[in-house]
Length: 200
Image (cartoon, rainbow, N blue to C red):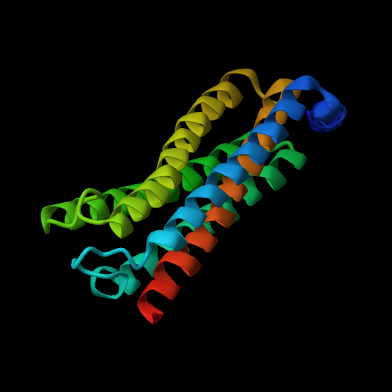
């Protein structure tokens, strides 16, 4: 069993030159451009409150810090799932994926809760340029998290049914890159949007 996993890992590494993997890296680069554009728009519009509340008045930093810790923890458990693949332990991989899913889903639920709270208080995306940029940037990240959760669920089912095939291992590796990428993007959001927002 362990030998077959090692074979799958070798096959997955050889597949790094495949069109699928190249396409995935191109996708990640275009996502970098997308988020860079959204960050630039946010920085330009962050003072355009149109007489409405500013970041300092709106953001609940303990709440956002909890979100951040949840996403960082999910990135850690995702890494543990990848390490468990090398030990040919399907139960551990699935367990760490479930933990990653729960942490990611909790993060997304908190983000949606924050959005609902802002909208209910009359601070929706249409209130000002600042809020439009905020909802667009953070909402795009949340959409990526939702996509990642769906992808993770599909991979969990494939792993449970097929085991450590080369295709499943490769897809898990690509998913791990995607999930860590979202974690890095959130660190920038936390710093630029929230920390700098309440400090200004």
